[in-house]
Image (cartoon, rainbow, N blue to C red; front, side):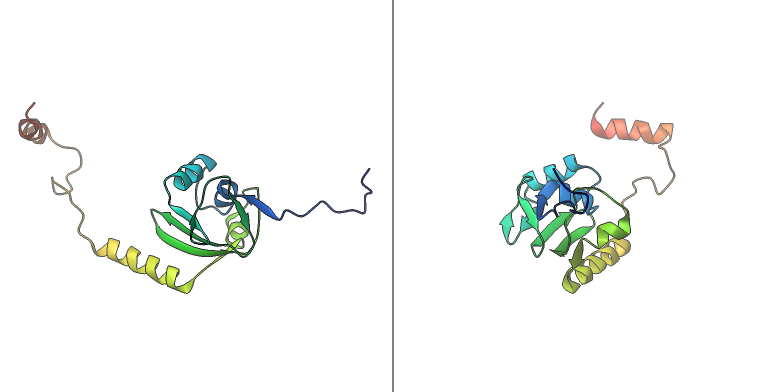
Length: 136
């Protein structure tokens, strides 16, 4: 039996999908699994499967809608906690931060396509034009 003075064993590694979810890169583990399966996650320059172990010191590249993250794993967690705790699990490289900031700026400056000029829902006339163009 364990004595009360013994501490719980520390976790040395955790599954990739659990770590990505705990570090708040994805809202659900299912989305983390899907990203791994689609090849959007690399660990130490190798494609990462959802069950691959993440260890402290690993270098991960994570492609999400917000941009590409290049991070070094600083901590291991199997549970999803507050954002401040999640951000303590990794350190993002300076180049990665700069690229994501540039990408965000480019998105702001890019023109948005709006076929009806921001008028909200299409009017009856607009819907008729849409149907005519689509051949309905």
